[in-house]
Amino acid sequence: MTVVSVEKDPVARTLTITAEFGAPAERVWRLWADPRTLERWWFPPGVTATVHEHDLTPGGRVTYDCETPDGPRSGSWDVRHVDEPRRVEFGLDSPGVPPTSARITVADRPGGTRVTIVVWFAADADMELLLSIGFDRGLSAAVAQGDALLA
Image 1 (cartoon, rainbow, N blue to C red):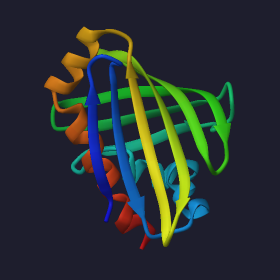
Image 2 (image 1 turned 90 degrees about the horizontal axis):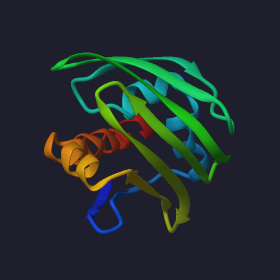
Image 3 (image 1 turned 180 degrees about the vertical axis):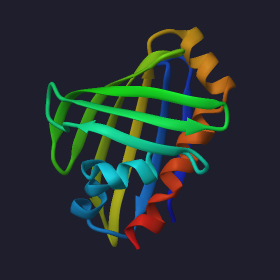
Image 4 (image 1 turned 180 degrees about the horizontal axis):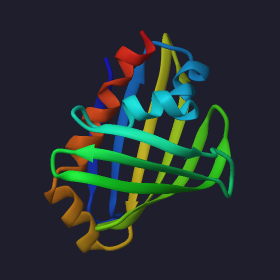
């Protein structure tokens, strides 16, 4: 089982995706820690991505280019906090997309690992815009690719 819940909280302006994997936390952490794996998992199916800079340390940056059905896009993460292999927090910056922040928590569970991804939107309108273009569906589809990469 991968994605177990997708919760949208308009009052808190958050999107929370919870997923479970049948692999230990250290292996699940590699989904973010390895740039080649990140290219194959953090982006929805059908999106080809290339990670250029990958400094997963506080104050570091992750930069990428991707080819989407709507054309090319670039973006970056400003890494704010890392507690390997348990938590990473970053700000997302992509031209034409409202800025957001994310926290990913990796926790042991019987038989594997639970991952909780919380995305914060700066304003109500930002959340409404991103959800209207399917941000929640895209991120859920991306996360669902984790099982295949961990197999």
